Image (cartoon, rainbow, N blue to C red):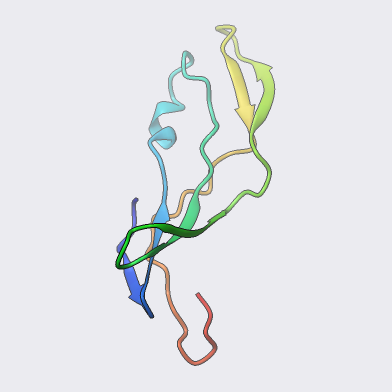
Amino acid sequence: MTSSVKLYKGHLYFGVASREEWLSASLEYECCSFRGSVVSRNAKTGEPVWKTFMISSEPKPTRKNSMDTQLVGAAGAGVWGSPTIDEKRQVL
């Protein structure tokens, strides 16, 4: 969880990012498999309601780098900012 949490009508909303931004600098790291997302959870129970990835397709092996490390993609699009809620239009 990398953003501030928003509470709206019994649900928590937040963004998710990862450490891959700096781990990818290492030629030994199998970059990159993380996909940023926005998550909704029930505010009372913490149970997941939904999760939307910023990149819809799951990462797949692409090629190997100069150190023979397997690379994957597409990945990225971490969500660092807090979600905004438009109450009038009921849009996140």
